[in-house]
Length: 380
Image 1 (cartoon, helix red, strand yellow):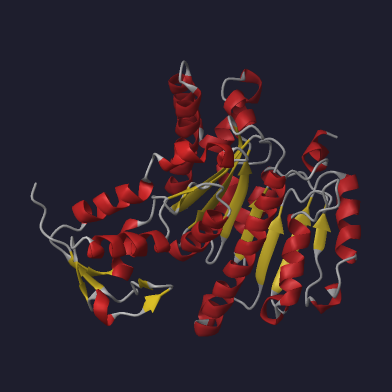
Image 2 (spheres, helix red, strand yellow):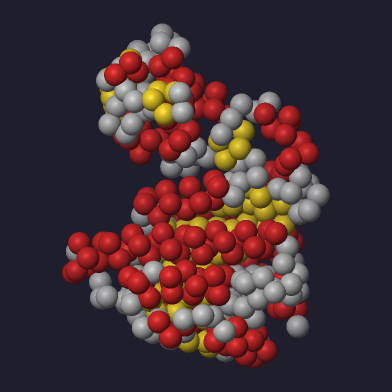
């Protein structure tokens, strides 16, 4: 079956994708449970993980795929295993049976209050309608189709509509890029981008260079998701083995900046290139061979320049700088602290308390969230 090709080998990219989702699941669950304890009126006591294209549970080399990793993380945490409902689905009967067997082999599975459900359904209008009509508990939904059938804006929005719900999905860039010019899959492309946006893309993409085409497609998808209420969209790119072409993207969508911040830190960790400590949000097997080229971009230098321009004449805390500035940019919190330390060392800002009154770590002055920063008025 074509649906199984993805699982025939455990390429490192696939394992990293599964690990990113599993790590986010644990962090998301802890945040949601904390909010439930603080504000009981927000939701019932359950949380859910839903995987609509779950696969057989393991790759051909025996490595665990996302469902197994998520369940193992849940079992390890007493709070999560008392609340978690898991629903796995795969339309392939062989995958369903394999996944059920792999789940039953997980040590201490009985500790989960709610045992996993494994379904065998086609992902389409029926599932979307059920989700649209239901008020669902806080849910992390993972959508990982082999191609694009079943993936739609309606599906993502049907999950995001309720409190505490986030979505991560696999975006097969190569197949979708080809699909936009394929008359036989117009319906699927319209479902993914919206008809008006898909028609506009078909006109605009003709004659574009490959890099511009990719950026345009991913940007338009991000805009479509934001229009539906997924205010925070974060793509992570995977390159092929030679590092010259994009194979796919893992795209995260949330209504809350906290989820965005958590996923940003996780994706940053798995970025193969970190120019001046700034993550690329890309897994590229070839990065190590071309490190010199990447260093020439100097992205931290650009952040230093932006901060001086964007906060000119203002006095603001480190935390506020980060919160107001990082959304939509590749920088993580650590990058902002590094940029501000550099600006202070170069006497281009005034910090309160000053460096000599702050703690040192590993021989260098730290920059805590509460440190106030005064930027000079721009000379321009």
